[in-house]
Image (cartoon, rainbow, N blue to C red):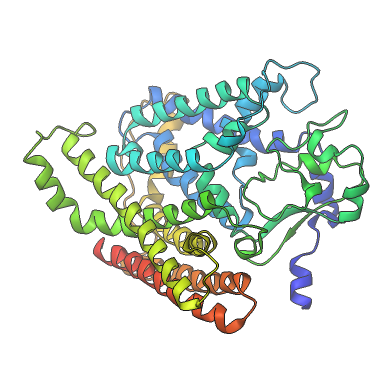
Length: 474
């Protein structure tokens, strides 16, 4: 109990944290370095060495940024979003200010259509984003990466000019479904302190803003009792807006939102399953079936050259969609079995599917980390080599590094052990979440355990696919 109290201490009780988060410019202070790095990376990708391994922007984007992104949301949820240059650009143009409250803006501030306020579009964009790397090899192509940066920049500004607040970050960013769902596992949150204070508040400044602040850019109303991290980008706008100092920032147990949120949602459940499926079942399908499927497709189409090899692209696309479909069907099938095992007749299988889909989040996230770990450990040396080359032709990066360090920071055997450990942690945690979800669904422990058994089996199947994919990729 004492440990839990220490874990949930309000971090704003620490003077330096309070002083920083009370600053209206706090978010800008965090964004400025990433914005400068983003500009530099874009310049080097466009004008620099057109080889992914020797281009500073490419190495930084797909080694440093991608690894940092995942590490951040495991601890701080949408911690990256507070520093994201794309969201910032859309917001700055919309408000015509960097952080201060401006009287003028050029955005239309239209309400986003209610029927689109969900993760369905974001899930599609996430699948496309992951496929771009698997199918087109975007992380190995400076032109394609530059194109992605342009699309994200233009998209954020365009959406910001039409719709209110950070609509792009909520529903259109290709990573929002991934980061939002993953952040529900993070042990950090921003929440109200006292519900009574919020009920008596007339201004609702945390949401509406005040004379000097804008209020929450993600339409998260702390006064209503926020129960999950999915949309909170930790911008602290609610902190600086609240006139009663009624917002706290604290650590809490991992995965708390996954079983403690008020109500499960179909789009979140499907998103959770898609994320897990993309790095488990899909990875296994690509390892086991890409060669035979590619041979079959090549009998119909002529092969091209990367990134326009349509035989390879179609083959990967078929396996990608097939793997995700199998994961969804697998989860629904086991959800139906959970209903049968529980013996409950007045609850539909869909309700079991919606409730238990969240159980796959830890496994999917830890498998993502395992894959990124291998990539970072194999390519870490290149970061220093390309940085030295950039210094010789700053900022255009047109000089090739004399050599690229290809030594692994950890030998392959130990890397594999670490990957197994991360995946194993995700597997065990997913089982734990599945059991907590069964207890949430049924007060009777016997019924809850019976409902848990098929879902535990589904986590086992997806977990074995993850381990098989890791071993097959050696």
